[in-house]
Structure formats: structure tokens, C-alpha cells
Image 1 (cartoon, rainbow, N blue to C red):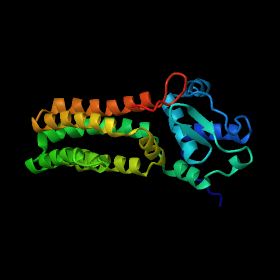
Image 2: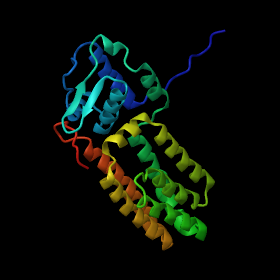
Image 3: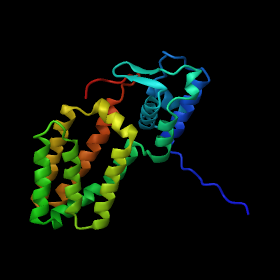
Length: 245
């Protein structure tokens, strides 16, 4: 009896990375050479620059290129060695990784409503947990954990277990994403955390005031801010990657 083969869903940034890797393997981009700018690649491939950035980070994880902050993206693999680089890393990103921008856009669909519901339905203890997570961010050199605690506490206070589970799942996907982790290594610093803390304060103030409209808008503005910072910080129009955030 004939059986069907499983159909793998290949994400856009992965297809872009595979095309660029193929050009490197073909010798079109020699070792030490700089890749075309993000803008040029986006125009040639007819995709967004966000997808190009995700692809370039994936290629760096796999050993094809090196991202030099403020300079550009350079080929590190030779034509001969490029057939082999980081097979395990490529398999991991292909099977498990969802691009950071997709994850953030999904959060934008869910978390603003969680914030609005938390303002309406959260118990005193749940609101205290949100406030505690927010305050803890300013008392540590590693605020990432408390960032997740803050958003998780809001989801827990929304009164809808399905929404809370969805938020937790999106955060788990983010933590499991090598591309997301590498982006954070490059671009998340104390200045970014200070901005996020101020945005969290506006969310917290609205929730404590039991104002669902302000809470929804504040959460949406926070997530839009993250997207905007990532899109801005990854490069100028000439394709270089800027060191400052």
C-alpha cells in the first residue's frame, strides 16, 4: 500500500536563508566578502527586510556568515566547507523555529486583550503579582525573567485559561528560538530594558486603575514599540547594522 510522505512547512525566512546559503555554496559570495545590503536582498527576493534579517541571523547560527555590528554581514564559510556548516543547527531552525517577528505579531493579537481583561477581572492578589514582577525588573541585572513574569501575570489575571495558555506558549516558542535568542544578544541592552520598563509602567498603571481601554492601548503600544525597535536597529538603508539602540 502506498503511503503519503509528511509535508514539512517551511517558513519564509528559512527559504530565504536556504537561497543565500545555496549562493554561498555555489561560490557566488566568497569567504570574507560582504553580502548585499538588507535592502538589496529584500528587493531582489521581494520580501520584507524583517524576513531578511531573520534569515541572516539563521545563517550566522549555522556558520555561513558573521554579523559585524555597524559594518555588515560577511561570509565566513568557504565554498568547500559551506556544504557542511551546522547541519544540526539548520535542522533545529527548520523544524522548531518561528521567526521573532511572527511571534511578536501573534502576541499583538492576544496580549492587549489579556491586559484589558486583567484590568476588568483581575483579583487584588493577581494585580499585586503584576506589580511585583514590574518592580523586580528594576532590581536586577537580568530582567528577562521578570519580563516574562510580568506578561505571564497579566495573562493569568485575564480570567481566560485559553488566553493565558496561548501567551505562555508564545513565550515558550520565543525562548526556544535560536534566531530570537541571537537577536536579543545583539540588540537588547540596558537602554532597551529602560524603555520596556517605562512601557510596562503605563500598562501597570492602566490595569491598577481598572481601565481596560488604556490597558489594551498601553500593551499594544508596548508590543508595537518592540517591533519598531527591532526593525530600526537591524540596519540603515545601506544595509549596515547599527550598534546603538
